[in-house]
Image 1 (cartoon, rainbow, N blue to C red):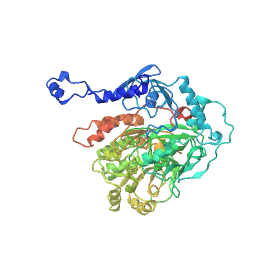
Image 2 (cartoon, rainbow, N blue to C red):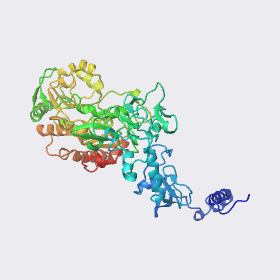
Image 3 (tube, one colour):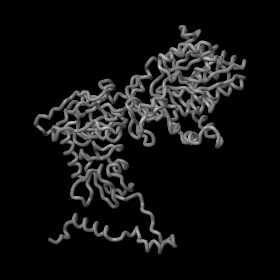
Image 4 (cartoon, rainbow, N blue to C red):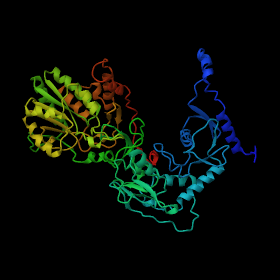
Length: 599
């Protein structure tokens, strides 16, 4: 039978076949190429990477290959969705993002449809809105109404879309299908299969991010449910990302479950201190406590993800804290609590005296301390040299763990600022083993530790601690109480990473900002403040730029690092990292009810 010209679909197919069979004007034959080789003016223009389309009557441009949903969201058009995530493939299983494309007989899923030139897209027609409500009602048919006891309440996409698009009572009178509710499927995660809307985000996280197949869908129809394979657990190092991407309360973290309502939390942007990758994170805190860490989008560093181990770094902020300054006789004997001013004045006077006598002093740069504090310590090292001291520097930190490294995010270096510590300690700095060897040979009269992190277990630290007993002066700035700290004559409480403003330099030489989210515990102060107070008491530096604030120290530091002549220390890539560093605006914590950053 002959093809009828009234069929728009068949006509478009025929036109496409004719166009494919004919030579493309943008790809000339070899003869025409030779003909135009002598004249550059006759060469065809390069193809554009952008297409022009209409969104609800507004003409916009979008990059080729972008899907319609991303273009709509970029231009402020609210299209609801469940299964789509920018860091995952788009299976278009929820059918919630349907839009109308003029010329197409059916509505198309925006998350799966790439943009095309001269495409006319309509997202708010009565037909589209009606289908969107129908799909939402279909999703809610078997969903339990347990929002008051659900951990996801307040940041649930289903809850949000119901309020925005439907807000009607259920028309179904049949009983809901019940599924298993409290399932322990891994060391960190609980599953409520009844709440699951089968969007498959969590399955794709395991497959595409962690690279392991641990989650799947079982059964069919309204009995279909999320599950793990028999005898297996959801225990990959990135398992908690499934909780982040879950649009409902089907997957919940055991650590955060039933602890705090989402709308009571405040969020502060920061960087994970768990390793040298420096994943960008949000600190969720309330009532002066940190309740959880979640990943923050940074396509250059961690994209949308972080490892499970990094999420628990907040526990160290309130674990074994040193909350007050102490003065003692050293040798592990009990020290007496005193004011920070008195303790620093005592240490500054004795250290200045030792420096003027030409003693050998050891300065320890911890890879867990901010760039600004380490920069300040390096400035004071030059002042000590000018006073006549011989200064030796050491870079310390927690021990590397090669077994944890992968090609995703986890790094073998478990320190957040190794690059910064090595930069400011100088090219001839020793390591922890060098420090212990110098102590054993009694080459040092005084040691000033800015951070007590050492690549030793607690039992090994107890064995090494007596080596510090031979010092005339041992000053320790520490976040936590450790066996090494108890040997110090002067013990100064330092603020933890979540209690200070500053920067870390990651393994890729990117200088990234950390922000204060909670107040320091007890009398603790930032390492930078303690170093500044030290300099004032010893009269090595008074009211200099870096002593004003962490921001001023950052600006002074960047100016000095980037001013290094080519071919000298530090390395060019490190200089480039500091050259691109930005302090950013001072921002107040945002309450989660207004953040809209998750789900």
